[in-house]
Length: 140
Image (cartoon, rainbow, N blue to C red):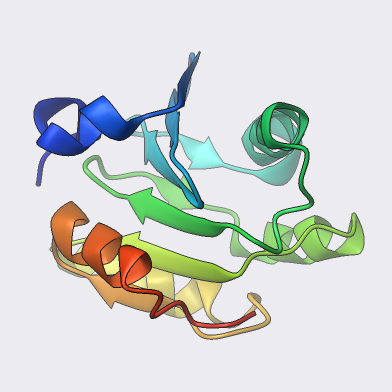
């Protein structure tokens, strides 16, 4: 798996947000996250900051955005924290995970227990972005 920075998609990035725990790439209509190895990704320590920064930059509550988690590194997600995301009145048009390993797919299965809608899995960033650009979003 490769980072957005190593693809021709990088030229389409509107804004890049760099945090100590990972990078966020904002595109027209979607964002891509790449979280660092070993992070225990939670609402309070990570996601809230991303949501606030992306919302401020784009002026949206997310209902018009697709979130693509490009899992180039192994890390854990506090799956129950999806409840905090929705409790704070944030939304997503779609949630896609790019992962080609069993660990990432197992995390995805746990996240699906707390995410309100279906999560679509891809094995490459290109597949996820192409699906997004074709308007094939899973509606949240």
